[in-house]
Length: 411
Image (cartoon, rainbow, N blue to C red; front, top):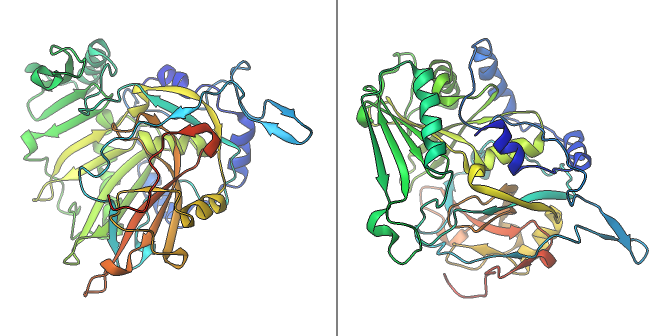
């Protein structure tokens, strides 16, 4: 994502609440581990040409930042020109319910830069301009922008491009209003590496037709048999050797794990751009995270680079509620979830984090408090606990309409 694109998407972020957040920012326990491995690769000169380099955008004084005035004495009026956010419900249950298995909630660390000591008055909200019923980013960033990204990648890789294929929506566009000749993907074959450009701004590098690129023997790159320390070491190696594709100048390395029903670990390997500004870091974490994927032989199968804000339009900075207010709403049933049962009670609330829901099926990309709640009826005999995800909108309720809050029925 170009600097001017992310600046446009994030314009008008209020300096006051950015400063307030940064003053209270305390790194999570695992931040030291990330810094350790980032430092090991810090001497590498990497030129950013794709992905989102987090920046602090210039503030435009005419933007409807917070607060903008007072009415009736002490009552603060936030963003009088802000439109009401009309949420359009999508099929959240298409892929089952969102749950995470672990022996203890402390194992489900995911690298989120937010913590409960951070205080915000407002956060930016975006319109997903590619929202539609078939999950294809239309109009997306456009064919011309995809061609431009591909040219930049080809130049940096210094490899001979053997073949280019452009894929159209075709019959999938029937009844959607999307032209059947709309190009939603461009694939370029460089021999050992295939680069796929997507209309949602994403870039996927595929190695040797998914057969994968070999890593030196000293690196472990698996989903189930790599320790946390080994994982950080591997991410640092991949960051060093594939910087031309990853395209970040500053990086935070993240590895997390959960378990399957049999107790086998499932580890992830991620990177996101780190600016030191908590608002931009939150946006990068939610919208622009880079995923590294091994194959069954421990080889590098693909690198997926997200660039979701390139398909977004900033609506404005909206006032948000506190974690305590969100917790009260959760207890009272004011949440959305794909978990097929009612929230079991306050004592089962295990964790909370502030994130953006950024799926293609969300017409509004806004912040939520995600509560992980232990589901006692889904505990496993091997000691594994199941933690279900319950979402409470972080935006003040008066600015939202149409949100499908849980109504006491099963999804």
